[in-house]
Length: 583
Image (cartoon, rainbow, N blue to C red; front, side, top):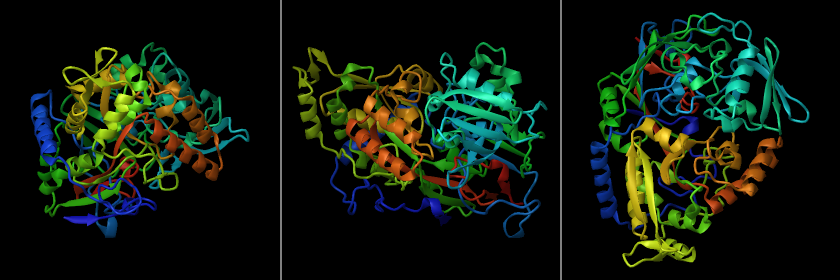
């Protein structure tokens, strides 16, 4: 099997080269670990996966594209003059039933790629993850930074033939995204927006409460425009299942032709699409929750691409002559979120203690075979120009963890369980059946038990998990992951105003961090932004809004007959309309 590194996959300056490295200066040094305990926990994880409500998925939603094999094809021909097959089907996977609306509170990893193909936004990312024109052709900002003007592409139609206009953009944001009663997905990313004004059919203005330098970048991040003529007058847009779950109307290169819950979604080229027509007959997303089933289908030639987050699966794929592999650093970070509406977790010493008790290097070595680095915050080494490695770190140190808990008032009770004010320290961890989440959660459970904490684990299927933990915030602790935006502006994920129903999952509130992140998103000077985000990373590492675990490398495996343009993986599987298969 061919192995290739693209430019985005190289180690950025300032990051450590050793696999499994924590990113600190100097070479990675391995040390002895309680491997027997880790192995036992992983065996328990396997048993839990089999016994629970469905095996966890491992491939990213839709299986994202890679930079690779071939570059985009010209009409009628592929790389090197190869003829592409206009009757080809590209088959991908998604781990759960999708929702055809990027703003729906239940639309997450299982829906992102599909929504990008049918409901695009004003901008989209290029291969360097910079915003470029899409439904908007150009944009500018006023001198005070408070009004962004976007010129819209003319001649665009919805898939039902209705014209796309500025009214659709204004409606999407004013009536849905900015409506506080709806709790739209990603709405916390637009807290700086006061209103959106349709100036004329092809011009919109975003009026801001404060400068928001990264607005064009956020508009490329799953920010699809919805059709006003479909949603206008609908009291609850999330209840419009004809659109959200059956037959969405979009402006993207594809449209939904068939959706069978629990089975598949079939997308076909949208005849109303304004751009170059896709080079394939259709794209089928199989709904496959179990990563082992995904791999089996890839090996059988039934699936064309997988994003593998579990390197232990590579043994099954290494020597297949029909497959191509690519490794890239990602903008993903795994974490434990502690619900800080719970007074126990408002004490920084408790959060720090729980982080010291987690052997992050052991997790990287045993869960992902060393394909990652210990995370210190939300801005990864991939974003080398903003990444700050000179921050507080929490290497595995159970004795220090115990000392911090004792300092915070948690002392062993007669049964050995820590208690404070007569109440035992009990935590329920909520875990989703996806990727390495359950095995990782069970490892954390064991390490925290070693401190004298009673820890239970509640395993849920993906959709139930999203509803319970993410939408309703009905959890005490949970292990999950985020993708950092291409811009270092992480305000929507950490701001106090995003606690509760926004993307601030742990409900963390800190005015000092709010101020730094507001200044970062308002600054227009690159040097000023770098300094602000360096300081913000130091504060986040000290305060631990999340307990940071690891930044993974992603491994993309795909059918050699499938050709994708450079950078498609890095931009989350965009540009699927440029993919093609050779005969």
